[in-house]
Image 1 (cartoon, rainbow, N blue to C red):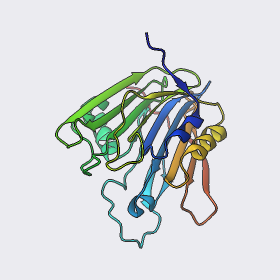
Image 2: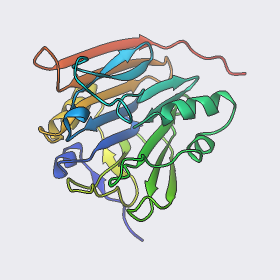
Image 3: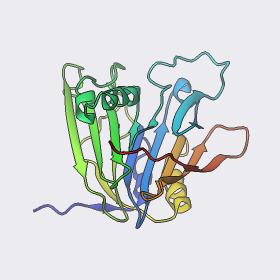
Image 4: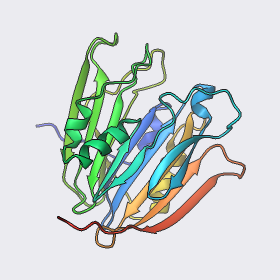
Length: 253
């Protein structure tokens, strides 16, 4: 029987190009989420995260630059009832639409495929977590053969486990074409402090390639959340935005 490797957050320094990454789990008493983006092209690097109500959005940093918003401008994090959706593309909206029709996370992602950005065929990674019990699911939709022939869809489901989280990402390294994620989501040990959680992730990501990071810690009893956003591009030394939000509780039907 294979023993699952448990990683420290500093393990993120071992790969200079994870691409996009989702990490979901819990501390000793809060739900924990992180989403980050990395980039190599000028178009990809011209981005920042910002908070919009109970959502997180992406916008171009230099709005006057000639950019192609396709595949890079989207809502990576949305709240839907007592669920939080986290993805690396506009499939966030697809999942939201399906949940509003009383359909499932899996139903939504079976209608989507990897990104049409040959020769990389970037995987679509997605997560959904319950704000009730902290359980969560992760998914990756990826190219089957490096040629864009078929889409393979993988789904993973996890219970809430104190001080542990799972990490899924798009790439295995920095090459051309970019090597697609392999294996299963990685297990990480995480701290209780949002400062330590955020700073360790941010400081472990490659300095040249990291763009933005958003972390959240949510109290499942009150639905109060702490949010931290780090953007590499900002008119300050580093944009650090910490917000406490009291989410309106959604009544169960």
